[in-house]
Amino acid sequence: FKPDILAPGSSITTSTLPNGNIYYKNTVGTSFAAPHVGAVAAQILKQYPSASPALVKNFIIASAYEGSTTDSKDVDRAWGRLNAHDAVFPTDYYDEYDEDYVENELSGPFQERIYQFNVSAGSEEIIVTLVYSDEVAILNDGLLNNIDLAMENPSGSTQLPSGYQTYNDDYYNNVEKYVIEDPVSGIWKSRVKVIHLNDFFGTIPKTQAYAITIRVIKAS
Image (cartoon, rainbow, N blue to C red; front, side):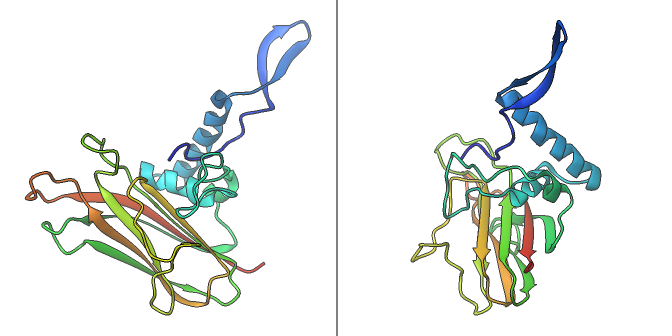
């Protein structure tokens, strides 16, 4: 699922070779969108010098607005419009982030990581985003290392994406983003779970690193 993010690329005012008294022009192109995202990534690294590429990407996608979610993908919207301020300086909400890893069954007990957080009454949204770097696919068109993000509401039930009757893993994307509007108050859980880690012989311990962010938007 590409692109990952939308950034300004039209009606860009930039310097140009002098032409009489003209030193600037309006232009378009992805060559102008990419530096917007790169500058935000640099600002994130300034705030979080030890952040991995997955965490930097997560901050950018998690803070994007008017974009796709795991249950509603649209290539015209990507994961949303770049929100430079909120990517670097998250405000007005409870924010948690973590970098960790999960393992396959052969290498230890960490097949699932659980993140528990409290949602106060009247909260507007929960935004949970998972990002990881998958290995290059060779034998199929799905993920070689497939880890899943699932949400559990305070009643203990899996929070199904909008319009879904049953839960289905997304096995094509190494980004998952859930936006839950008007969430019920109480203790929620985000689960990061191994679905499959690439091991053709079934005997090699495997791990997969990831970055997760949890954002609870408070009532205005």
